[in-house]
Length: 281
Image 1 (cartoon, helix red, strand yellow):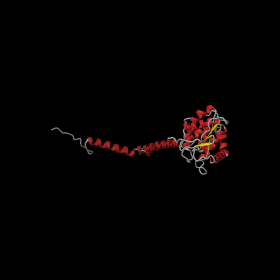
Image 2 (spheres, rainbow, N blue to C red; image 1 turned 180 degrees about the horizontal axis):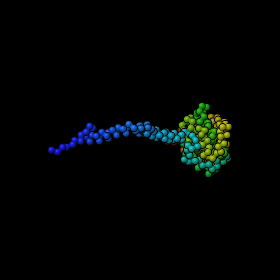
Image 3 (cartoon, helix red, strand yellow; image 1 turned 30 degrees about the vertical axis):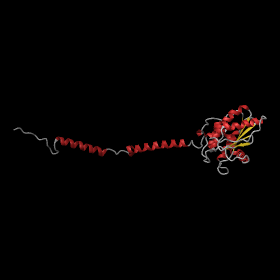
């Protein structure tokens, strides 16, 4: 009979002893491994990433919002169309001895004045300025918020400062292009300075004019004169001293009829009738 030697020893079979040795090695390695720093954990890294993305979004929104309602020169909106400035004379366009004078009493905060300035007024200037027979005069007044909120006063005073250097009309166009909500503070000093730079005004000279207060007094005086026209709403258009009455913003065609009547009367034709409006639809 052949003897068989058993592989079973005190530690079990050879296979069992190998498994036990591997297990012991894993446990020893786990006991000697340093714990992972918290800042290397996936949860921490994901949190930091989310915070960084949020910070970028907040910064972008802040920059975007800084451009609304006035601000630095970098946020000044350019007009889509400019008033023709040939024959500009401060806040007027056309010769002082023109047969017909068209006066516009307006407020830079007035939405209707904005619409008038960007369409009707520009069309009229293009039509009549080349003839030399019509003079247009803009009277910026403190109508909205008068005596309480100074947004209209400050905007008009800034335009008057621009008029000193015969840059009233581009400044006028920029103000309307950047018009914000009434009495909201949109004509901030930063915006007014920014527009001054856009139209080519000397920054120091403009600041001295605006801070000096003389043009603020000019606007107050003009506003007092408006009460004698009388101006009951803006814009109010006056043709050779006669107010044009309308419930709506008049079109260039409507005003052309009255200007032509005034021109005919000045040339010795039939007397001009009092301007009257056919309400725009």
